[in-house]
Length: 189
Image (cartoon, rainbow, N blue to C red; front, top):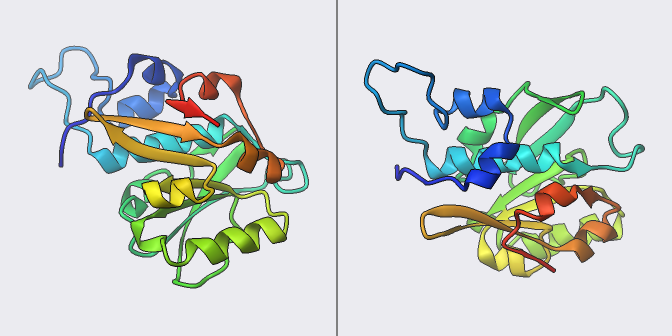
């Protein structure tokens, strides 16, 4: 898997334990001298984790001390890397990672990660989430889904992971993203 360069500003916002856990910051005096390469999927999963850290859900959608549920459909290219985030703490919430069966409704999810395999299902999912007033943070790892209303969109640019934010979609779901996170976005609509 390709090694991906990381923006220095983004690394500054990432929890040190996560950086060390994925080899983005090497401990001093490593035997081989070089950090293990980080896959694109692991790096994107780290972005998703930080999206959760810098997002704010309405109190009724994410009560204090309840688990924060991150979902992706079976077959999602990021699912294995997202599973590595299981049981991490996000602002006092234990992160629970669920693999959804095809066609399953994401209503019990707080964060939904979508990729190319979800293109056909996205229009109906998007409609159902919006019609029900669900506060589900949607993250697209696919440009087509991103253009069709996902709140955050991940992509690769010059071997770097970048993201875009759609404030209108966030507001419609009654969600707020930290200005610290938004400053790092390639674009904010």
